[in-house]
Length: 303
Image 1 (cartoon, one colour):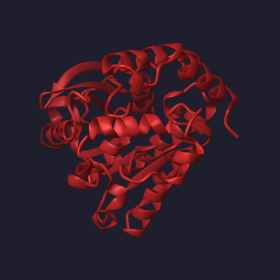
Image 2: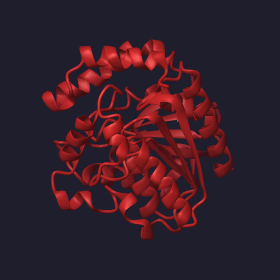
Image 3: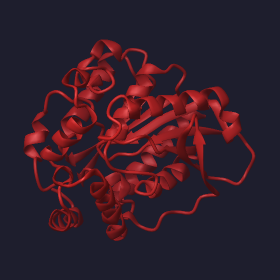
Image 4: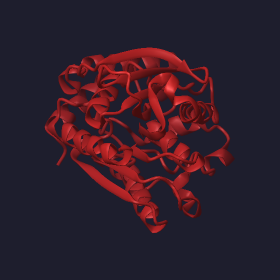
C-alpha cells in the first residue's frame, strides 16, 4: 500500500505541474525545482555537513560535500542526479547528497552533467565518465582517495552510475536507486504504475526520446545494461534500491538478478509503500531507513 503522504503529494503534483513532454525543457526544469521547494515537508531540512563547495572536475561542474572538517583524503562517492537526463541539477538533489555524505562518511561529488535535448546521448555519459576518471587519477587534489571511489545515482542518474561501473575499472561499489536500465522494452511495472505515481509511463517515453533520439543507441550497453547480461561479470559490488510503486521497479529487480547471475556481489532493498523519487524525501521514515542502509553498505565497501 502506498504511503498516504506520497499519494497526496502525487495528487497535488499532477494538478500543479505540466507534464515535461507538454512544455519546454527550461520550463520542465523550473517546474522540478519548484516541486522540490514545495515538498520541503517531505524532503526535510537539508542536513549540515562540514564543507560544500562548487567547483569543476575535468571541466564538468560539480558540488563537493565533506562530512568532517579535516585534511584527510576520504573515500568518495560520485553522485549522478535523476530527472530523465532532461531535468534535475545540483540544487534539486542537494539534500539527498548531504544525507548520503553523512550516512556513508564519504565525500560526495555531485555531477552537473549536460542535459537533453540540447545535449543528447552520449553527452551525459561522457561527463559522468570524465569526472570519475579524473578523480581516480587525481583525487588528492579534491581531498579524495582515488583508489576508494564508488558511483551512485537515482533514476537516469542510476543509469549513468551503472554504465560507468561497467566501463571503468577500479571502482569499489555502485549504488543504483530506482535506475533506468532498459530503454527498449517496457516491463510490466510500466503498465501497473503508468499514471498517478509521480513518474509516469509517458514521462519515461519522453525522457528516452529526448536523450536517445536515435533508436539504435537505446539498445547499447550505456542505455540498456539489462539487455547485455554478458557484460556484467566483473562489475563492482552493487546496492540496488527500488520503490514498491514505480514504473522502473521491475527492471531494477531484474538487474539485481542479472548481476547475481553474473557473479557480482549484490544487496538489494525495496522502499515499502514508496513511489519513484522517495530517496530524496528524507522526512519519511522509509527514506531514512534505506539511506542508512545504503550508507552503512558504502562504509563497508569503501573502508
